[in-house]
Amino acid sequence: MRVVVTRPLASAGRTAERLASMGHEPVLFPLTEARHHPAVAMEALERPHFAIAITSAEAIRCMRELGPELAPRRDEILFAVGEATADAAREAGFRSIQIGPGTGAELAAHIADTDSARRATSPLLYLAGKPRSPAFEEGLRHHSIPFVTTECYEMITVEPKDDRLLLEPPADAVLLYSRENANLFFGLDVVRQNAREFAGMVFCCMSENVAEAVPQAFRNDLRIARRPEEPSLLALL
Image (spheres, one colour):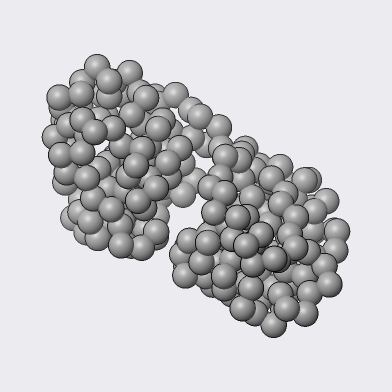
């Protein structure tokens, strides 16, 4: 299958390798790119907090830009939303990582059940991006966990360099990672102008929330991952 990968290039490489190992042809078609603010992250890290929380590996990529300044932080407790973010944290040298079940709401519940949260006298530091799902912060409020959100990166929309990648020859499947990701894809001129061709493609969504952003005309073969993680997404192919 020709499989369109809509995630940013910084994280698409591994996805392409996995697809190739499965016998698929990856088509890299990023719709966004990250703009990092490492100085903002550093300022937040210097303020009191009992642990760090991340819901995207992009926050780790931002922190890595701090270089040697990150070294004193690598022994801090870091809550990662799932395995992919935890892997990125390990590669960055963090040594005290706790892994959530995969969603923001589940991570908040996991943190609430830890001794570090129950004994905390400082807030949790959430290193976040813009835009983002509100689920994690809503979960923290629900569990009465004090926290501070710092936006240390933002996802910027980019114009695809070559729309023909999607249709020459036609792709068989498209991977959609977030609601924003889906909105951008179906807002493309090439998709709107060639709706009949795209309606025959398989659309694989990371979650129900992502699937809700897929227009009805493109739901002929809509698939939703069992868990909000890439292995589950790729298993849909």
